[in-house]
Amino acid sequence: MARDDPDRLHRLQRLTDAALAHLQLDDLLAALLDRTRDLLDVDTAAILLLDELRDELVARAAVGIEEEVEQGVRIPVGRGFAGQIAAERRAVVLDDVDHADVLNPILHAKGIKSLLGVPLLSAGDLLGVFHVGSLTPRSFGDEDVVLLQLAADRASTAIEHSRLFEAERSARLRLESVQAITDAALGELGLEDLLGVLLPRIRDILAADTCAVLLVNDEGDELVARAAVGIEEEVEQGVRIPVGRGFAGRIAAERRPVVLDDVDHAHVLNPILHQKGIKSLLGVPLIARDDVLGVLHVGSLTHRLYTADDLELLQLVAQRVALAIERARLHEETLMLDQLKLNFVAIASHELRTPAASVYGVLATLVERGDQLTDEQRELLLRSGYEQGQRLRALLEDLLDLSRLDAAAIHIEPRPLVLHALLDELVANALPDRQGVELRVASDLAVVADPAVIDRVVSNLLINAARHGEPPIVVSAEQRDRHLRISVQDAGRGVDEELRPRLFERFARGDSVTGSGLGLAIARTYARAHGGDLVYDPRDEGARFELLLPHG
Image: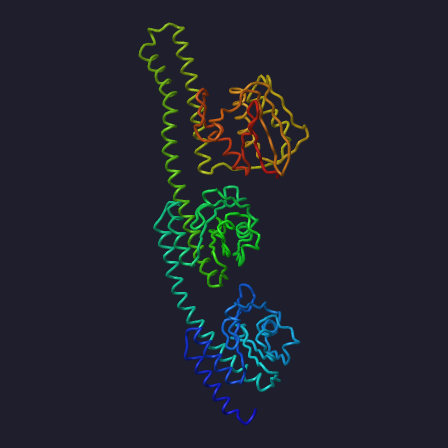
């Protein structure tokens, strides 16, 4: 080193003192840059810190070229002067800036002729880049490189020290923020009330302008806007986003956060985001028990670069929100099930009372006045009692079926079947006279399915078609779209439009229809137990039901 090395080392010690004296990062960097410029006798000094989220260097502090910070200069890692230093993690010297690869136009605009830069490293991790410059041509030597690297090492320690201090303080604030979310999540049970309380808090915590929750629909293929603040139109207009498409759709499909720094130049399906003038977005998936429930996103009306800390905080919040949503849904489902049970007991009691009362009435009459009745009267009473007994027995069997299904006591046992033979037998058993029934099934159609499920569903559909429809009754089957599809169609007037929405509900039936109203509910439950479904296909005339079973 030169003979003034002791003086330079003394000034380096002053740099270290400055590094350890400040905990606020901005004050720390300002002190470091001033003393480094003096230490190396240069005109400019600047520190760019790594934005890990975007893999870019961001101008954080500067002296002599303050415009770097004012204009928010960002340099991709691997490109230009600073990007090369970061990517290669080594010192870079530019003796002639005018003829070098320099991305930052401010360096040229300020008339900087020579540059020296070194990486900021802490425990092997890249923090950023530290560079100095001269307004006159200068050949930076090995001694300059060593001194700047020593200064950078001390600066790295100080930056890491300051970051740890800020991280501890931020962590405490985050915990307080998350606790506010948790308190709300535990305090509200209804989903609408819950989201109404949570979203304003989330917006405030992230210092954002908008906040929205979209939940996955029952089919799992769309996100539906459920609650929003700042962009209430999302909910009012019933915005639906296909999973996998657009901003929110990508988050749900890929199960990972997405940041949009510039909404105007990004692929965003929801037109409301543009209409409201949102410039930047940050979104994360809502996941509970490894299932994606939906998406939580916040937005800013001015361009904002959401940080890794913002992302971490939103993810912490999203975890609580997802658990709260699941808890609220379970609560609502429990209330609904309780109400269904009450309704079921009331309706079942009513349905049982009528045939039971008729049977009791017949028996009471025969016991109390049997000797006063004619043979014809006794025969009529016995016939009526028998019919009501049959009705009572059928209803009890249906209720027993429901109890077995509710208790998941049904076992599905698929096996190879020749479908034509099975359906032909079902038709013969359900409608012995077979009048008006057409079987349109290939004689060699082989499937793998549980015959008991097909029996339970198709027999119910055949009996309903015979009772409530008109001939011909057509039974057909095919394998398509990875499903076995068995349909039963009649030529009657079809299902009344007002009954269709609750067609598969328990005890649902039209005003003029007899029966328990349980058959279709039971049939669909059997179909779903087999991994399939039972659907009603509205036609211009007639009723058409289709049993779908997975092809296997």
